[in-house]
Image 1 (cartoon, chains in turn brown, cyan):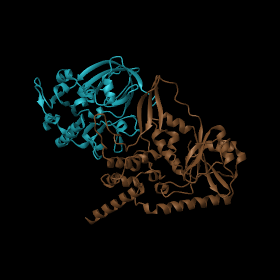
Image 2 (cartoon, helix red, strand yellow):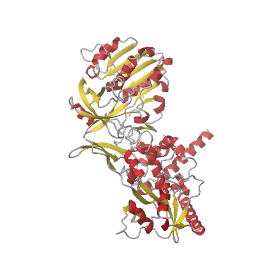
Image 3 (tube, chains in turn orange, yellow):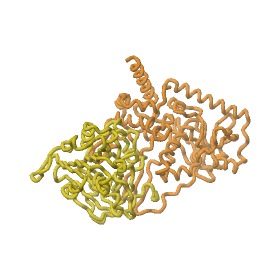
Length: 359
Length: 273
């Protein structure tokens, strides 16, 4: 599942007036997860055409991350004695990922599909996933994709992408699997008109403007990886630590945090090795059996997390790890806003640059 | 990797050697030979209990069996200490980068080891003496808390002392009645005149506090940061740079280490903790 189109190539764009026939068709060949409202936000739920109410278009990212589909909270990775092949993954589809979700998967791909050590469980699910992404047009105050190189509409990494317009939806093809689906279901699609495409562009531009307005106060003067790399000695992280309650919510809800913990479990007739999400903010996360722990202090753990997020990952893989979805800002128990932290680092840097000039 | 990423190779403990009150060496025969480079590590697992990272203490040239020296330190190692011959275990790996032995050719190799840190050093030592002519000299400065805590006693007090080209000195923090050697931490037997730093490398492995002060000593002797090799003990869990527990700054100790030159990691916080 990769976008195989080159940037210069014009994507074919179609129009559909209703969601349901498209989703019904997708769900015939695979399990389909669709947005399900929960309060002001969305999660994903299995779509059953027989009983489902009219499917909803989520106007903002769900709080559920793509990570949960690819890298579940807990899974068995080995069994002794062996119990045959690991669970076979049946093809499935998700409707409603936004550009931030797509970019979060590109981050996880770097880690779990790394050439020398590919994670077979992640890879199995990734290959079985059909992605129907969609435009975002109601960003929250926490949304900051545009600060981190993202857009409120899908760029790449989808099979199909939907943009809502007044009378229906524009459908774009992003992969060979997507093109095949459209060819197989040609009756559902008509060519999008110039007016419809203009409306799509307008709506996208409006959403982008809103995001830029939301995030204007947080613009920083330099690349964030550079900013963090040179901020190892700041006390900004220790200041944040004074309020942090170590709930680890920011790491759980983060679509690109991927730390895990391996542990052994005794089952009735076999031993299992389990893989479970972990958090670098946990006190004993880096501790060794002898008792040493390089990150006992909360401030050191916050420093490590943010330096990994913004600097170390970039250094290793060449892409930023934060995709600006803003989930950590909404989910943080004490209200830490990474944009504010980055802004502070930026201010400190400018201050120190000035000091250098003066001295 | 032909086996699943997380799948250990079945192995059996065929012999157990008591090295000290808290340290034992396990001779393990894997189902198929496991090739490794000296200084690389493996994850040894006890089914149903857990797994932990260890650098084999045997020579990589010995492909049939692997020796792993284990100090009782946590849950998994305590359970391993209760095991007897015949125990089935699992081995994943090898992982990471070992000692750049070829880069040591023509140089004096100055090795400082302490406690169970002698385990990786034994593997390195066996590798070096197999081609001792390639190195200008091998200088060993080993220490332990007490004479009883010193591991590989027979070799240290006997055969290794006799090897031509090897200069070995031992020390203990606290002596007992029979100890005739030096008393003091390991840096007390490291002397600037031992080595010509212009053409030497230092290799350090031991408890964190010892590694810190041995590194400071070597810097004091005039070694450059890039000439000091450290075998870092961190919480290596997955072994392949994903789970995150062992990170020192941008490095995954399991993948980029566990052997680092000091210049690689000196800029990061709390590396000795």
